[in-house]
Each structure stands twice: as structure tokens, then as C-alpha cells.
Amino acid sequence: MSLLRSEEIASRLSKIRAELPATAQLVAVSKFHPADYVIKAYEAHQRIFGESRVQELVGKWEALHESYPDIAWHFIGPLQTNKVKYIAPFIAMIESVTSERLLREICRQADRVSGSSINGRRVIPVLLELHVAQEETKSGFSRDELFALLETIHRTPEEWQGVELRGLMAMASNTEDEAQIEREFAFVRSVFDEVRTSGLLLCPERFTELSMGMSGDYPIALRHGATLVRIGSAIFGDRL
Image (cartoon, rainbow, N blue to C red; front, side, top):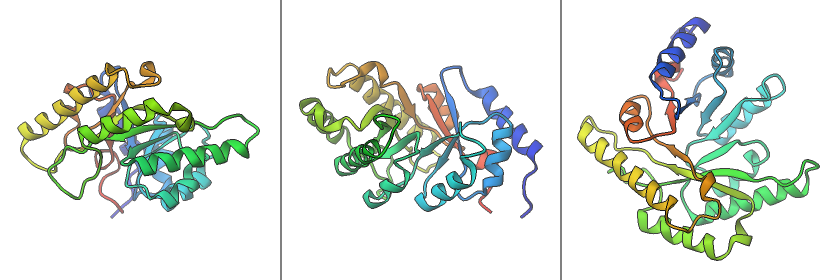
């Protein structure tokens, strides 16, 4: 498989951006693709990149951060608690928080970074992942679990100063049934709106992000108010 040229990646990015409303941003999913592709996308004015494996993300960050310090890295895949420490110093957002235990570890690692930093307190923006897909392999909170966590945070705000809740993330079922995808994204949007008006958020004005939609279904996600769409293969092609 031949490498994509810079102009090919730039053309694909331009086409996708033309479809996005002003309220939505593109997360270019660079997982399984070389750092050279990140550079080509960066040169085409892309700044947010999504990765789902800690080792791969750390390798790309180490290779690129000095020359491209304004890249915002989003972690979008399953995250083990024992791996949080490796990305806590630099991650711009963790989109895939699937448990209270993981959120507490992110807080702990943010506090650790704060304690060793001369730049002040480290606060890591996060999204809570809502489970709506039919596949059991996909993870996340149910609606009731989500609200139980929000109530816990609301009661003990002093325990959560290392994170900032910025919104929700979700993945729809892997299906050709667009009506089902439509229902799932509509449900995510309804829960998002419910959370925003629940009175449980410490900073409701900052809870603004709705990350849903990938290469195959992002137009549907945009119809339901997605503010972040995670697109990889439509930009970078199949994994190398």
C-alpha cells in the first residue's frame, strides 16, 4: 500500500471540513497511521488528532511536540487506569471515560503532574462515554450510571479538581440501519441536554462537547448536534 501524498490528505480534509457546521470540529483519527501523516494533516491546518493506544500516542507526541506544540491530542479509545500516568502531562482531552474508577485515576494523575509542575495546576478535560450501541464489546455508562456518577461528583466536588467535565462521547452501533443510528444519536443528544439542565454540573457553562460520529456515520451525528466528529479512514485511508 502506497503512502498518501500531502495533497491527497489536504483534499480529503477540505472536503470533510466543508460539510461541518461552524459549531463542530474535526478530530482527525491518526491511530494506526504514521507520524508523517499527522504532519501532512497539520500542514493542511488540522490541529486536533485522536489516538486510541497509549504507547502509539506517546511515541507520536515525543516525535512531534517540539516542532508542533499546538497539536491537541485527544485520547479516544479504551484506557486502562495504569496507563493514565503516561498521557496525563500532555493530553488535551480524554474522550473515553467509562467508569468512576478511571475518572478518579485521571484526577490522581492530574494532581501528580500539578505537584511536579512550575506551571500551576493541571486540569484534564474529559468526556463521559455513554453506551448506546448494540454491541456488548463497546463500553460506557448507561444513562442511570451516568447520573449516579454526576450526583457523586456534585456531592464531593473537592475530590474532582483534577478533571473538567466537558461533555459526552458515544459510538453508534456498527450497522447499515441508518434509522437505528439515528435513534441512538438522538438518545445521546437527549441525555446531553438532560445533563446540562440537571443542576448536577459544577461548571455547566463548560459542558459543551458532544463527540459522536465517525467516517461512516458523521453526517447523521451532525444532524443531532455533534460538536466533535472523529474521522480517520476518510482522511488517512485504511491502516498501513
